[in-house]
Structure formats: C-alpha cells, structure tokens
Image (cartoon, rainbow, N blue to C red; front, side, top):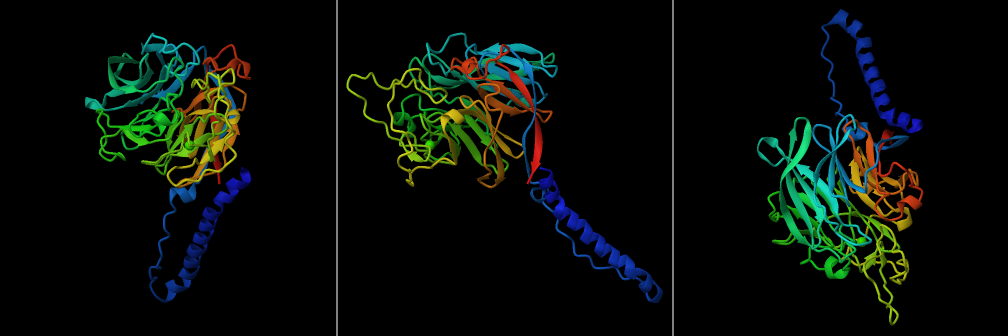
Length: 443
Ligand SMILES: [Ca+2]
C-alpha cells in the first residue's frame, strides 16, 4: 500500500518540481532584466486544475480492527443512520424498530407487527427501511417493508424527534399487494432505498414462483420497483403505468448506487451461482432461464416426488434435498433478451444480502458466506476484483452501513433460523452490531 501511495503522489511531485523550475527560471532571469529595462510580466499558461478523480483515486477496505458495540439483537435486517447521527435498526422476526443513540444506548421506537408471518423457513417479516424528508419543514417519513399473512407491503410513518429520541406515528399502508410465497415466506427481497433520483426503490424476489412472477412484467414480484413518494408511478419508468423497473430476479436484498450513478444489486441464486448485477432500466436479469452466467436447468422430478416447495433458498439450502437440478455450469448463457450478472459467486462464498456504496467501494454483506465482499469502483461501470474480509469470523452478516464517524457498522444474522450458530458465527452476544474501522487504499 505504501508503494501505491508513493506512486499516487508522483504526478503531484512532478507538478511541484516543474512549477519550481519555471518559477526559478523567472527569478533567475529577473536581476539582469531589471538593470536594462522594466520587467515584463511573464506569460504563464494556466495549468488545468487536476480533478478529484485524478488527485485521489481511492477506495476503502476494513483496516483490521473491530469492536462489538450492540448485543442481544434478534435477526436485525436494516441499519440506517438518521440526520442527527443516531441509528435505527429493525428486527425481522419481532417487528421491533430500535434506536441507537450516540452513546450506543438501545431503545425501542415501535413495533410494526406482532403476528409471526410464517411457520418455518421464514425469511419474511420486518425487512427494509428507508427515510426521506418529504413533509413540511423538512420533517421525515420512514418507509418499512413488512411481510404480512397475505402479502408483502410497505408501511409509511411520520418520523419525528421528541425530547432527543425518534418516534414513529401516523402509521399507514403506503403500498400493498406484493406477492408472498406460502407458509415459508421465502424470496421476498425486501430492501428499500431512496435513490439519487428521490424515488422509492424496492428490491423483490420471485416469491417462490420462479418464472410465473420473475418473467411476467405484470407481476410485482421478481422485480425491482421504482415508486414516486406519493405512491404514483414515475412517468419515466420503462413501462407506462407500471412500477416495475427491471425483471428476472430470484431474490434481491441489496441495492446501492455508486458515484457514477450506477445501480448495483445483489441476488441469491438457487444452488450454483449468486450474482452482483448492474441494474438498468427495463432489463431482464434472466431468472429462471439463467442462473449466474449459465443456463439454468431443472431436471424433471421423479414420479411420486412431492417436488419443489419453494423452500430451498440461497440464504441457506433447504434441510432435505427437494429440488434435483443440474448444476448451472453446463452451458454458457448468451441471449440478448437477458442481462448477465457482473460478478458471480457460489452460494457458499456469498449469499449476500445488503450492499452499500462506501467511499469508493461497494461493500456487500453475506449470510452463508459469512463475509464482506469489497469491490472497488474504478470507473463508470467498472469494478475491481472483489476482496473478502472477516470470512467466518462473525457468522452470517446481513448489512454493512457507513457510520457518521467514517467507520462501518455491520449487523449479524445468526439468529435468523438458518444455522448461523453452527457455522462459526456462534457468539453468546448475538446478534450484534460490530463497528469496523476502515482504511483508504490509493491506486
Ligand atoms: Ca440473473
């Protein structure tokens, strides 16, 4: 890193030297000129200001030090910081939204729901959150993604600070009727974000219905949605009167925009390939025709086999073999109607949920892989090789978020019923928020 640092300074160093030589030449010639005639103003050709990109091409990675700062959470799903530096975190299964103040005291803010949304293999519940200042005088609203007994929906609250603490009121249903699967509530997606365009973005899964939802532009599931803050359809969405921005998704739980304005999403594959996708308007990302960069082939079920019940998920495989499939590495998939992923991983190395853009890096948080993948953004639609951190150290990781002090806060998900405690993540203090120090890498 030191060598890279020095290398980075070379152009600046040369600029200073050249500048000194020019200046020195003017000074050196000045005395003789002064005797014979008045000094003429030297003509200086202005040097163009170097852009920030040229001066400081850099990204961040974990520095190596970390500290557990909040304990005893239960399957936290979203972590976000409010404008005053306090944080909100929600718990998927309990429906509790918690505030973490600057002294890291944890207090309850609200309950979204007290009804368990499913019986087993649960992935639904209280999932994504996003806030926006869309009320008079800059007051805030909070959107919350919720799985109910009949659908996936988005709640909206007024979010106000009262005596130093955040409180939620005026709860209403902002958006409803998104498909959910049966009793298992798998493949909900569930991430919410306010994009750079000020719209509400929603990442979804196929609700266990494969192509019936993910390849049908008239179904909400299996899509990324883009919604105006008043609930209407943006006029520049790809299809008239449709919230659907993109299709062909199996289960997308992460969305982030980089400094070039590109949108990146994570996706859980079925058995063979997880994906990072460059998410663009109106495109179809292939599920279930493709998995990763290969054709997806599901073998016919043997006679008498109860068949796929949709409960096998890339967050973790189903406990008993249910879906016999051909591995998706037999035939490369190239079809101009569909968009292949930017990066792929096998699920044991990935199963990534949240993703964030942090100071030049995309950082995805992985459940089964139990790690952070850090991907430097090197240019427009150009990422550097993924680098992995903390593999196996904390167990399952749901999301990483940049904190106001420049560190990274990550939330574990070892109590989500997917075997985190048996895969190296066991910790009596789970689930936790861990503060990770970052360092800058120059290139
Ligand atoms: Ca795909």
